[in-house]
Image 1 (cartoon, rainbow, N blue to C red):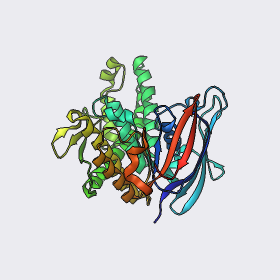
Image 2: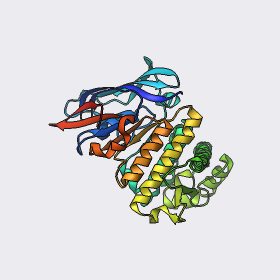
Image 3: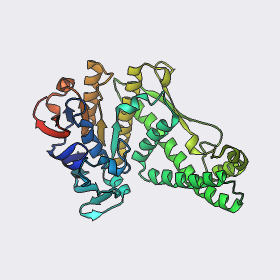
Length: 370
C-alpha cells in the first residue's frame, strides 16, 4: 500500500545535534532518553518537513546549534505515495529558512504537496484550559493538513488586519483605505472560516468511523457575531459597520481571529475544560488520530505523526491501545519518552532510538529492541 515515511534523516548543527544520520525502515520510531537529551529536537527537525515554523514555532536562528554561528540543516529522504523525494531545509546565520525539493528551490507550501505532518506536544496538554489563541492555532494546523493553502489565507488575513489596526490606532478616517484592507480581510477571512468548518466536519466523521479506546469529542466554533462569516460580503459588511467601535478599541473586533474552538467530552457531556487531565490528554489524542484517519483518505497515505512525551497521563492499557491504533493506521509515528519500558507494548513493530547528551551535544544510537 502507498505510504508516507522517512527513509533517512540527517541533521547538521541543529539544536543540540552537531550531526546525526538515521536510516529508517518505515516502522514507527520510539525515541527514549533522559530529559534534556535532545529527543524533542529530532521531532522538531521532522516537523520542518511541513510548511511553517515547526512544532516549537521557533524562529530560524533559534534552531542553530550554539555556540558556533554556522547555521543549520535538516535533510531527508522521503517516501511519499510510491515516489521518493530528497528534501532539504536550512538557514544560514541571520537568514530565513530555505527549502529544496529534489535539488530545486521550493516555497515552504510545496512541502504540503508531498507530505503531511501532525504533532502533539506537552504544551498542548493545557489547550482546553488556556486562551483561545492556542485553540485557533490547533484548529488551523488541522485545517492546513487538509488544505495546505489555508496557511496562505491566514497570513493574508493577519497582514491586512495589522494594517487596519494601525489605521485605527492612528485615527485615520479615509474610507477608501479601510475598504481596500477590509476587502482583503473579507476574502481571506471567509476562506479561513470555510476551511475550519470543513475540518471540523472531517474530524466528526473520522471520529465516528474509528473503533478506538480514546473518547470522542464534540466540537464547535464559537465566538461573537461576525466572527465566523460564511461569505466575504458578510465579513466586509461587519468590518465596515464596526469601524467606529473598533476605533475606540484600537483593534478589529470582528472576524475569524475572534473564533474559539469549543470541545465536549461526548460520552459524559462534560466540557473539555472541566475534564480531568487524563481525559483532556485522551481527547487530544483522539482528535490527532481522527485527523490522521481523515487525512489518509485525502492524501492517499497516513501522515507522519510526531507525539512528544505521548505516554504522559496514559496508563499502560491506553498506551498499548495507542500503539495498536498507530500500527493499524500504518503511520510512521515518532514518539518520545524518558524510558524504554514505555514502549514495550510495541515490540518488533517499531524501531528504537536512544538519545544521550554529553556536554551539550546529543548522540543517537539505533537499537533493535527497547
